[in-house]
Amino acid sequence: MALVQVDFFSQSLMRTVTFQAIIPTDKIIKGKVQTEKKTFKTLYLLHEVFGNYTDWVTGTRIQRWAQDNDLAVIMPSGENKFYIDNERTQEYYSKFIGEELVNFTRRMFPLSDKKEDTFIAGLSMGGYGAMVNGLKYYDTFGYIASLSAAFLIESYPNAVDGDNVSYLSKRSFLESIFGDLNQLQGSDKDYKALLLKIPQKQIPKIYIACGTEDFLIKENRDFRDYLIEHNVDVTYEEGKGTHEWDFWDRYIYRVIQWLPLKQQAGISSGHIDG
Image 1 (cartoon, one colour):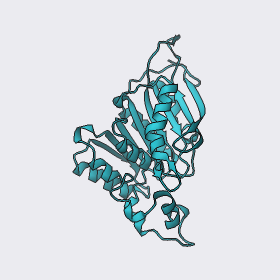
Image 2: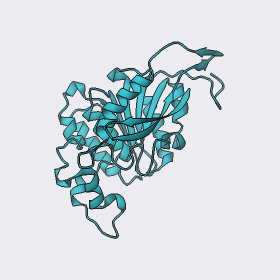
Image 3: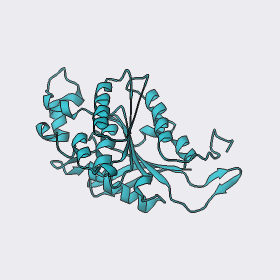
Image 4: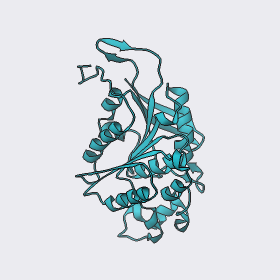
C-alpha cells in the first residue's frame, strides 16, 4: 500500500493544491506480492471545517480498511469553503471535486472510471460537500456517504452577525461562501433541489449516519425523511456519539462495509496475518 502526497496546479482554484491518496498497490497475501495490473474502486473523502487533507488518516483507521478492501482513497483539502463553487471569488470547489480531481487522479493512478466503482463521502462540512457534489455529479459517483453532515442551508437566511455569534454561523461568513443566502434553496448548493433533478433510476445510493448526541441530529433525520418521501435508496444509521472523531472512526468503517467492496487482507505494519 502506498500513502502519497500530491501537489498539482488546479485550474478550478487557480493555485497549487495538495491531496493525499491511499493506493493499495503491491499487497502481500499469503507470502506473495500481488503485482497484477488492476484498476481500483475509489473513495473521494472530504474533511470537516478547520481541517485539511491529513485529517482522515490521522483521525481514523482508513488506511488499514482501504488496504483490506483494495480501495483507493483520495483526500483533498477543502479549506472552509464547503466544497461549492463561488463565482465571486472565482474558486470553483464543486468543479474541482466533481470533475478536475476525479479526472486528474484517474490519469495519475490505476482507478476505475465506472460510476459504480466511484464513491464520495465526508463528515460535517465534508458530509454536506459529499452529498451536494455526489448528487450534482451523479453521472460520476455511484455511492454517497455523509457522516454528521451539515444539512443547514434552510437556516442560513436567518443568520445574523454579532459578537456572540460563532464564526461559522455569522451571516457575513456564510455570504462569503454561499452568496445571497435567500437564493440558496433551489440552487446547485441545495441537496434537496439537486435530488429532484436526477432521473429516479440514476440517483446514487446514499448512506447517512449521525450521533444521537450530535447537534446536527435533527437536520440529518429531516433529510433522511425527505429521501424516504422521494423513494430514494437510503441507508440511515445512528449511534451513540457527539460531533467527534470516535464516532467518525466507527462509522467510516460502517461506510466501508456498506460499499460494494471485497475484503482481502494483506500484510502491513501491525497486520501480519495476511
